[in-house]
Amino acid sequence: MSSSTNFIILTVVTLFASQYVSCNFKLPPLVLTKVGLIQGLAAEDGDYSMFLGIPYGQVDHGNPFGVSKPYPNFKKIFKAFDDTVRCPQQEEVNKTIGELDCLQLHIYVPHSANIFNRLPVLINIHGGYFQFGQSDRSISNPKYLMRHDVIFVSLDYRLGPYGFMCLDIPEVPGNQGLKDQALALRWIKNNIKAFGGDPNQMTVIGLSAGGHSIDFHLMFGDQNIFNRAILESGSSLSATVFIDHDKEAPLTLAKYLGFETESVYEAITFLSNSSTDSVIAASNDLGLKYKPCVEKSFDGVVPFVDKNWVKSMSRNFKNKTIMFGFAKDETILNFVNPNTYLGVDIIYNKLRALFDFDEEELVRMKRLVQSFYLGDQVINETTLMDIVSFDSDITYIHPIRRTIARYLENEVANIYYYMFAYKGGRNFLQRLY
Image (cartoon, rainbow, N blue to C red; front, side):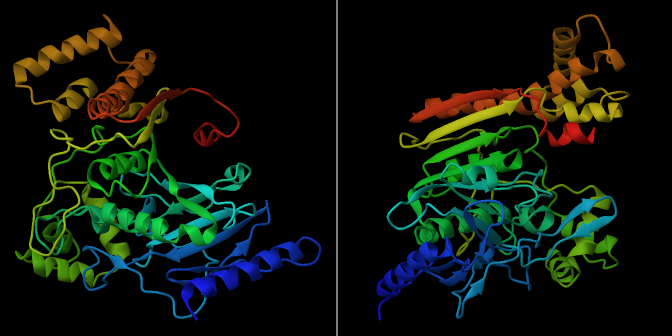
């Protein structure tokens, strides 16, 4: 019996069961995808089904810092019931969580979706400075979206040293986390029909590092995977993306954990056999940062970011609709800890990090910028909001405007731009502080 016949039979049975559910009992949703049968859960807070923790990729435990591979097809029904797995990261001070087998996605499907009524798909890539974050319901609750006939998908990808260590060697070329995301997007494109989704109406949405990531996918990824994108407080030109990649990070980590060597390969082997908790904790203790990078080319290794994204954007976007936006006072969270701005020369430091000025020009630019934001005043408790405005502009808002200009130059089909300024009862940080 062909797979298409199996799909039709399963669909008919499922449709019949769903009609029977309303007056009797709920059957667990069962879907036949290209990778096998997947069983989900009926949601208790709305008319939708949940398919949680579906693995899309497989990490090589012999080299967890390398490129992942597609997860093999399921030989029996996969029970998609669990969304508690996290990728390795630091959750709180002195507390690390997560495991390597974390490349998974969660799919939420309104009951209105079926093979005769395919719904648009919204895919969320979480933020977190490429260091932390998660995609489960505690962060990406689908309940409100389900009312509007859209299938919602959220995904996890490797973070920190496992996702963004960039060493200029074929075993760890860089951007492993972005490649995880690309693998997940291909999985969704190939399988979302089975859930009643329309693979030709796929929108990717991301906040902060999620937005940075989407910008990279637009510039370097498969143009045919999604046709719309929403970038919230993020672009590849953001000040939070740029770092000098430490090619000796494995040596530094290994030494900190008690193994001293001058061979990057020996260090990688040692770290691969170390617990993820110890590697993440050591990275945080040492203040090591990991972000996207321009990869070197190697035989048999396909780079994701193959050129400097600041200097080049030679793609055509005539078939893309993109929305950019930011929140008013983006860096207001720093206001909670005034020492972020007090006692440091924040304007000088930001300009030095982002622009290639000599010392004389840097001092002159600092004076001009300080005059614009503060006038004749200095940085103190009464002018903190002025510095928040400066920090928001240079870190997020100005890079977003530059990015919009680049897309317009490359003939984007449609582009939208917004500022979010509403303060309401669902403001997570407002409730905390």
